[in-house]
Image (tube, rainbow, N blue to C red):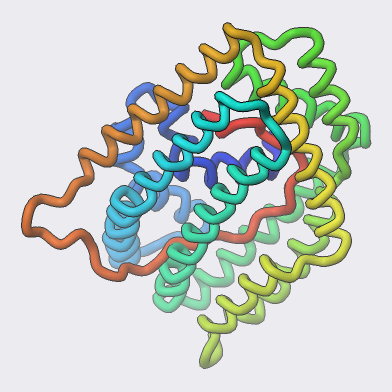
Length: 315
């Protein structure tokens, strides 16, 4: 089971590095993201041919923006990570990198919301109803998946994911590191209950907004911003507690890495850097051709507050 912060880090950390790092054919995957995202959208809405073409065209513009404006910034984040590796690690240093992830996430959210809102104008009432039905079905699935767990199962899930994430970037872990991750996982507060409650409230609000009365698009933007900027006191308490635990355990893991783990980590980051450089070079606009105009922007349903951390961008 993939926890929320793990998912979020993958999106934020280096945008599409989730796909880049997981696939040996980086260019093949990234250059077909418009198709893959369209396929994902159609999990929620059955689009007609015109809507498919429109969405495909908009996604192509979005990906050009992402390649030319975001990927270079991901290289800068990699520079910061690699620079930090030469110094003693502190939770504050980890928090600084996470703030870069958050900034990248917000740019994607802003750029994306326009895309989905524009698509929403073209959907029929039946398509909107089907979209909301899918989201409510997910709510039931999430409740079955998350809330059925005991606290011990919750902590074990987080432990297993933390170990997998750390091994991805450090290689084999020592007994001391495994125990560190065990203690970390036990310290986490459950966020699934408060997230599911707030998600249900959000879906009820979204259903009203998607009646698409005059001014509905701006109200959706305001609702998304309010949900992001004004979490409940309980959600904020859990999120802040878990995030501080995440910063601390990542700093401890990095500070205690062996020479072999350091080499493994630097090789992994170097591979990500090479992938990014190739993609940026491929996306360079031909001489005399404008890059892109102001395209619509991709959005997504807000994700739950974090449960468990991925120590590094997982690939």
